[in-house]
Length: 299
Image 1 (cartoon, rainbow, N blue to C red):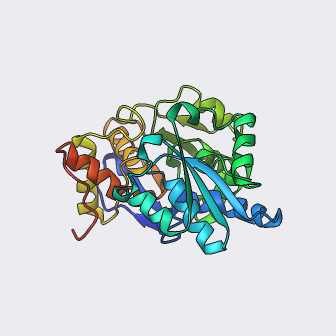
Image 2: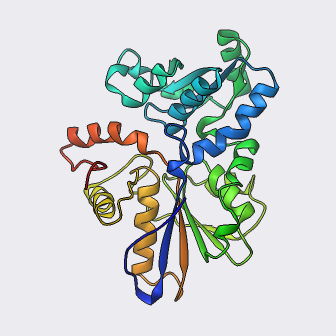
């Protein structure tokens, strides 16, 4: 669903948001797209369980757990941070994933760095038996294939496509299906010097660029300015934004508009990649730090 943004901008610039967050109550946004063909492949292979990786507030962990419950396949979440073990009762993401039947395997942050090591994957097979492997964030060729379905013929009228970037799978799919006249802008949610190289592995065109000035210090880093922006945007539009991905991207696009980055009459499509499930956990951290919380209820 595309939703116009009722905000006034100079030079007749228009913003529209594609509400991918509304695709599914629990498998929303780009996670729905990334899991679609991977779930079909897992079923085709006769897999009885899916194993994947993520942090304690990971959208991917929550979505994989929900998909496993819906499709009747066991899920295993290898969670970064051994110190979290035994302390999940205060974590909304892990509470939800556990309720969906996900089994957790907590490992140290040092061990987590081996998540792509074949020998480590082999050790996980010895522990859990055979499984269908989904990488952290869900990005692989099948995930990109799913993300290639984000844009439709109705989106050809836009001059620019903007989306948040984590592991690079979502923007790769968008790059591959964008029209020749469209420029794809990626807003990294974290500091990652190798991100462009990761995207090039999957992207087939050069119609894109990364805007790297709006990560707010790194992954999951936020400040009062960003929270105030997210709350103000919701107040004016009724559209909730998550603070890890889409909130930073929308902040960046509007800041670029105000600094004359876009040409006259640009019509920009913003991809809302979901991630709203993480707001409850983020609000607990914000309250602990005595920062404003994100308001997503009644305006």
